[in-house]
Length: 374
Image (cartoon, rainbow, N blue to C red; front, side, top):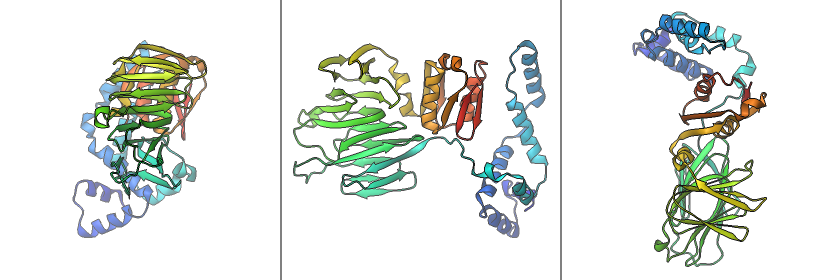
C-alpha cells in the first residue's frame, strides 16, 4: 500500500475504493496498525511547533559549557518525525528489513488494572480490563472487584478468597463490609467472602502494598477491622492507612492517614497518630515510629510516583514493579544517589528515565525487558 493513502486517511480524504484498501491493510497485521499509530502521532505533532534550529543551538551551548554529554534524543526525534512525513515508502519492503527478533522482543509496558481472583474452592479467575465476572455476592467489571454483604449467611465457617496482583498490575476491591482496598503491583490479599457477625473483621496482606479505607466499627456492632501482615497486626476502628510489606523488603511500614490504629507485634502494642508511620522489623521484633510524608507514601493510589529524597535503587524497585521490568545496576555507587520527583504512572517508562538521566548523575540502557544502570 502506498504511503499517500495513510496521509489521506489522516486527512479524512480517502475515496470509497481507497477506504476499502486501507481497511484491508490495517486489519491485516499488528505491524500495520503499530506503524499507522506511529505515523499518526508524528503527523498530529505539527512540524512548525518544533524549532529545530533553536533547539540545536541550545543543545550545542550546553555541550560546550559542560564536560558531560547531554542527551540529544529530543532533537533527533523531531528530525525523525519530519523525515517520516516526507519519505514515501512501501510497507512490504519495511517488513523484510525488520529482524524477526525485534518483532517478538518483549517490551516494557505501562502497568494496568489486572489481578487473579482465587475462589474458596481453588478456582482461579483472571480479572482484567474488558472482562467481567459474577458469582453469588461478588462481581467485577475487570477494573474493580465488589462484594456485597451476604444477608443469608448462617455464621458458620468463614470462606476465603485471595486476590493476587502481578507485577505491572493494580486493582481495587470493596470487601463485604464496604471496606475499600487499593492494591499495588506485586501484592496479595486474603479475606473472607462475608464477615461473621459480632466477630473481628480479619484480613491478611500476604505481601505487597495496600491502602485501606475501613468501614467504621459502629456500622458493624462495634467489631474491629484487623490486618495481619508478616507478624504484625493492625487493629482498626475506622480509618485510612497504608501498609507496605513487599517480599524483598526487610521491614513492614504502616502509615496512618487519618483516624486511629493500634500496631501489635511481638507481644508489644503501639498506637499511631495521623501523619505518622511505624516501621516493624520482623526479624528483630522491633518497631520505630516517626513523622512521615503520608501524601508521598500514598501517591501510588492516585496514579503517581512521588519520590522524595529517595535513593535510586528504591526508585527503580518501585518502577520495576509497575512496569514489570528487570533492573541490573552495573555501577553500585549510583544506587545510593538520592532523587526528588513526581511522575504520572501512566506515562511511558522512557520519559521517566530520560528525566532522571538529565541530572547527569546516571545513564540508563534498556535491553528488552531489562533496565541497565551504568
